[in-house]
Amino acid sequence: MATTVDNARPSAKPISNLRWWIGGLLFASTVINYIDRQTLSVLGPYLKIQYQWNNQQFAAIVIAFRIAYSVGQTVAGRLIDRVGTRKGLTITVIWYSIAAMLTSLAMGLRSFAFFRFLLGAGESANWPAATKAVSEWFPKKERGWAVALFDSGSSIGGAIAPLLVVGLYHFFGGWRPAFVITGTLGFLWLGAWRMLYHPPESHPRISDAEREMILNDRVEFEETHETKTEKSKWSDLLKLPQTWGIIAARTLTDPVWFFITDWFAIYLVSKGINPEQGLLAFWIPFVAADLGNFFGGGVSSWLIKRGWTVISARKAVVIFGGLGMTLLIPTVFTSSLFSLAALFAISTFAYASFSTMALVLPSDLYRSSSVATVSGMSGTGAGLGTIISTYLIGYVSDHYSFEPILITASLVPFVGMILVLVLIRPDNRQQTREA
Image (cartoon, rainbow, N blue to C red; front, side):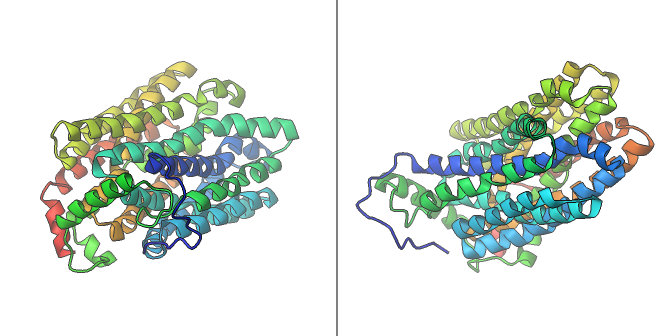
């Protein structure tokens, strides 16, 4: 699966700490990915007025994205394990950038749903591809930090999108240019990606010392994760309890994050806070999530350096995340903008810590040839959970209120925490020999 470099120049000067430049590209991809998807969420209050949609109708558009995103992650994960990270992410970024721009042509509920479906299909590859890239480029003691770096792009993108998109909406006097302009960002990123990303085995700009460090760590990992076949089948992977633990980790936490990203602006309006006022605090939970990514990755890496096993270090952060997300419950008792922002910030900080562990676990437990596949399957589980929750959010918020939603969103991740602790055990790593 290694990608050959036809235009490699062996004499080119090595780039110091090249793996972190790779990590920076993955971060930038995630930022752009989230800006593209958040454009609709930020414009949601305006579009609802223009097209006279209720919450259930808006939820139908969100679900169209989620269906493609859910199925797409398993398919994209397998594709990336087959064609390689460089080519796979190139194809999918082109796809979703075009889909984002085409959304400017939407004329109503069905056409919005169609273009969002296309966007979801393309964006589904980002997390499986980034997780695989981390497994290719980073030793295990740094993977928590690396995953935190690229995953933090979601919160940064979420924080940037309201300012950017609302600014474009007011500048142009309409919503269509916002989709066109945000959709062009992916094409700018592709130039840097094509120039910089190659596997460490064949990269023309990696130093000998960095290459040796990465490959030695990989050899050590594969010696303790021997498998009968180079590539495990889906059926083989699904027989392993740790696969279900990883799937549960994302299935029971990601819907809470997507509730916040898709509905936060509308939720604030339901509390009597208009979109312009909401901008004052809208970004706070997203910045908190960004900090949570680095907290989770940093703490787990610190614990590993202090002698903890990899799995024990990851689980310690999962426990913190599962408990921290229960602080969404107090939001039902306040309508203060900054109190809401603070409570959501604590919860998204905890979520991001948990999420970072859920994303890094495939690289801890599986060989590189299966990492994107397992990551994609967990993403599909998360997507299916999000589809169900999105439908329920639309129905419950229209017929009752957001309060039952917030209470449920606090408790479900706690169940996910329990399942991770039960299904992922230190001896699971040896079970990969049976896959």
